[in-house]
Each structure stands twice: as structure tokens, then as C-alpha cells.
Image (cartoon, rainbow, N blue to C red; front, side, top):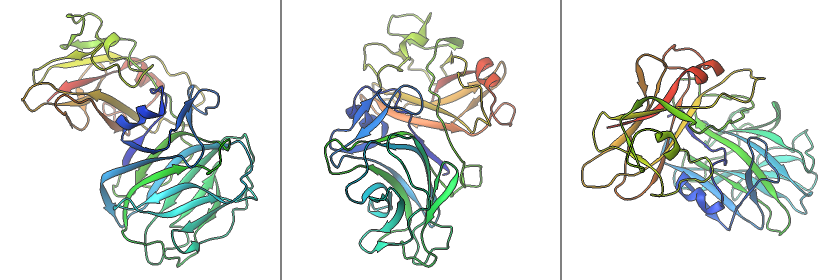
Length: 350
């Protein structure tokens, strides 16, 4: 495991849509287009609302990482938790908090502070990029628990701090807000990974932006049959950009192992890029009937298909799945905007 999860919040219309993405909720988080960092909308929390994302198979004794954009609308009246680092039994252990002085600091659940206030003072109505690094140990090193703000180290845990409450597995994270109505915390484009693998997703990645795309034309593979009983414009039935999914109103399907559909994606809008650190393919799918079936996402650029991990489907229930291509698998080189322009992405029945 390395890259684990990302969410742009672009393909949902209500907080309840988060459920299919692997999130759990406390309260009624809102999707808002009033404020956003990437795309056209983000998540807004108030009145002790929380969104949680936890993985089913945490990795032991490794670092966890989170990149997320954060904004708040009023100076906190008391110290407030923004972020919880969650262990493998879903216990929150390490917390990042913002104080009444608008500085950040870490605490350990049940024992209090494990470091000093940040040198950086935040301000209301301003987007900040937070990058969190954490580890659950009886005695951490000085760089095991850190928060970076807009690329600058803001605060960390003191060396030898005890961050191990119950378990040391990187289980997930929580994003939180104030208990007070009208105090809004905004979050956009969370990206979650750990250091358990040897690829590029095993350390800090810097500021990460997400650009969300949905198919706008068919690709070269058209084996699936659409809900309109043909394979002419299947891309119209898998464009879930406006809602998380529309159930059985429109879809493309095939019962046959080896069948595949591929689609063109629109050109990237962002041109001022340092690098494209990955292409994250997201699917919403289900199976009907008793046969075991799954799907694999794939990339093709006029040649061989390059498949991602299999998503074993659930009978009668739509489920969310994703795969990160760290680099262009065709060239074994970092992605470029041209790769996305010329290539196609799709699904293979397994």
C-alpha cells in the first residue's frame, strides 16, 4: 500500500453522497460551491460535524500522510481539532488543533500537547494547504509527526513524544470542525497515503491539486451495451460528474469476461504544472446475477492496454473503487497533459 485514497468532492451533490465513497459522517456535512479550492465545490463542516475515512487493512509501523486544503471563516473561540490521525482500530490518537491565537499545534488523545504552537499564524477566509505526516510509536523522532502549511514546516511533535495509544497501524483520518453553529471549516481535495511501499507515494509530495474529468467521447473499445440498448455513445451513460451516480437510470454493461469499454477524457484545464503525480481512476459499479465478476480500470494509448487493480463487484449494490496510476504505464514516465489528451481510459470485465 502506498497511495490509498483521494476525493475531489466534485461528483457529489449532498453530504449523504459521501457514503458510497468510503466516508462515514457525523452530523450533516454540506457540499458547497460558495467556497472551493479546486474545481467548483468542497465540503463545509460546522457544529461538531466530522467526516471519517478509514481503510480495512491498516499497515503497521509506518508513516501516514494527508494532503488537504483548509479554510475557516471565524477566529476560534476555543482550541478546535481540525484533523485526527486514526489507528487501525479506528481510534483517533494524534490531533492537529487550531488555537484562539490561530496557530496550529499537535495533541495526543488523552495526554495533551506533544509540541509547540506553529510559528505560522493562520487567517480567516484564506485557503491553506496542509500536509500532515504522522506515526504511532512509544517514542517518536523529531520528524515523525509534522504539519506543513503551504510548503513550510509549521509545527511538529517533540522528540520522544508517546503517540501510541492503542494500535500503531495507519488506519485513516478524520476532518472535523467547531462545536458552534456558524463557525465553518472548509476542506477540499484530501489525498491520503502511507509509506508502506517503495514507490513515490512513501514521503511528502508537496502541494497537491486535483482536476476532475469525466468522459466526453467513446474510445476505441466499445464492447459494453448501454442502457439505450446499443454501444454507440456509451460515454453518455458513465458520465457521473454531476451526481455520484444515477443508479439504473443510465449505465453501460457486459456479462462477458474480457469485454471492455474505453473513453476519451477532456483536455486538462490547468497549464501551470510542476508535474502530474498521478492519474486516479474512479469507478462506480455493481453486478447482477450469481456469477463472480469484477472490473479492472485500464489505460491505452494506441497500443497495449495497461490494467490497474481488480474491483470485485457486489451483487445488486453499487460500490466505489479507485486506482492510482503513479506514472504513465505505457512510457513508464511521469504523466504529461498530452498523455491524457491522446490516451483513453476504460474498464475491463474480469
